Length: 105
Image 1: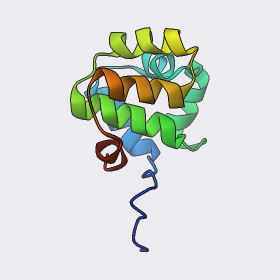
Image 2: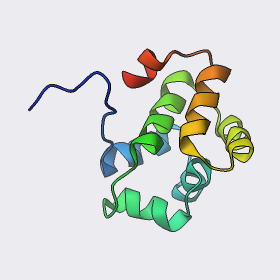
Image 3: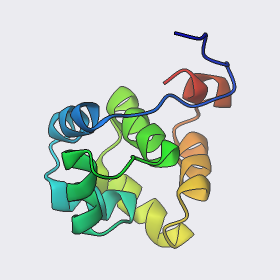
Image 4: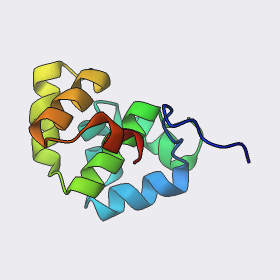
């Protein structure tokens, strides 16, 4: 396996997606809402039919690691109109987390 570039995000597979949303106490519909995608897309992620975007994977890992309540993320997403990149930046600022820590998630 090639070494991971420190500036790239790690891919999330369907199994990790299922485990992570379960650990966060979310069902597939809630996970879709938190990520700003439809419940159908969330089901596709769970089934492994659609790759999970790196931004979504990073947001879920961030929530898991820093114990971010789903309600906090939903409030930020309402401000950012669902833009995952801007949402991640606002999460980092709100939780005072550096980009280096995020890249290591």
